Length: 538
Ligand SMILES: Cc1cc2nc3c(=O)[nH]c(=O)nc-3n(C[C@H](O)[C@H](O)[C@H](O)COP(=O)(O)OP(=O)(O)OC[C@H]3O[C@@H](n4cnc5c(N)ncnc54)[C@H](O)[C@@H]3O)c2cc1C
Image (tube, rainbow, N blue to C red):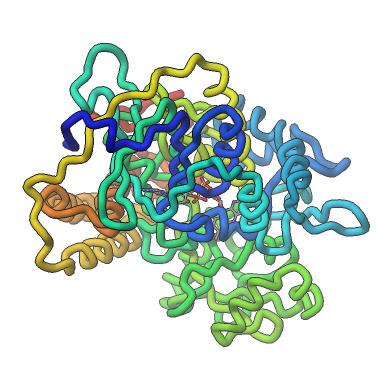
């Protein structure tokens, strides 16, 4: 593995290392900054995080018609038996408080007659989504960024390569501890950061698929780094496909927010027929997995590349008021929500599984935490309820900061410098591009919305070959961002396939034609590094 001379002079030393500057990373950094030196590191600007793209909103119990119990029950129903109920209760109970705090720090949620305007999304039985027009994630991120103090060390454009742990550097006396991480700096050098506490807030892995609503950086780096360091991962087979991503050559990750359907937009085929009622009586407002499968099924049945979203009857005024950014983006691509139907396709949207944690982000490694989309806290179960994830990011970040601050801090560790002796310059980079494309394509075709034993077997065989090629390439050539992400993408794709193979039923977001029914007893799929796969129940 990585290595090898101890050289703390080369390391940046901090009390808290936060990797990722989406909602989870920004919030935990803001909570920790009064208590020590914080490094907030991200491989791209905050505008290149899933958070920035979140449109619909953040869920919370904010109206007198609603109740905590109702939000809990909606979350449990979407999660199809696999939510950890105590986590759901803890997260949901904090919703209104978190939203009020966001308002207090300047997040401009939409209001109507002096009150928060609440919208409704699929799977929610009440209007409970606070939103800032159709750009809620951006509004939250901007408000959180303003909270960061000048003393915070902000490293943007630094890509984490691997975590540094006591076991990796050969210290097996005692439990495995996280000591920091290695980063590829913008100038091509590798720097080490030594830290008392490390927090992974690295987001999801949508880039594993060809069609995704996620921005480029969502390559599952945190999950892959944690796995290599020795953390179990849970329920990786549950990838949420958003039913309504734009189908367009130049705008493939533009999401047509669920709120559009919440406000009355229809899903139709090329002949204008609303077909979703053939699959579920809730039609377009059924949970995402049902709507996405309905679209996927109808596309395959009709042999077409896309279906359509029809929002014309909402009228120009309402569309401009509630969905100005989506309309603007579409107009730039020559499409208009007001006057035409919009071609759509389901696309990988949210990674429900992830690093095994509790609600405060504790992992199996001491002083290592994981929060937000990279973590599996147990909130979402087999399917995430819309707008629960921004809430999860902030609640986990808050609990995580509190848990860290309640401990006696360990000393700042000594970490070895990255050793790249023996690596040779690359002659060509075509293999990296080719492998990226191959992984995304095989995952889409064989491990997409509908799976089968045969498709999973094929995917595994092909992926194994690619993983071997990458492993060989990785240690012989200088690291680059593309190579780091490719290595992680391949690992995460493998975890998704293995998890899908272990689930002998259909549940939530995992649908198998070989096992179309749900088993009586819901079980988590737990993968543990360095041991044989284990199916376990939490
Ligand atoms: C289009 C879209 C719409 C959505 N709409 C909603 C919504 O309305 N409501 C809702 O609740 N949720 C929504 N979601 C989901 C939600 O936005 C995400 O789950 C949430 O924002 C994740 O936040 P995060 O902080 O965990 O990760 P992210 O916001 O994805 O941030 C990850 C950070 O980690 C950094 N990073 C990753 N790898 C590395 C590395 N190797 N080295 C250094 N830095 C790294 C990235 O640069 C980034 O800064 C939406 C998601 C998308 C894509």
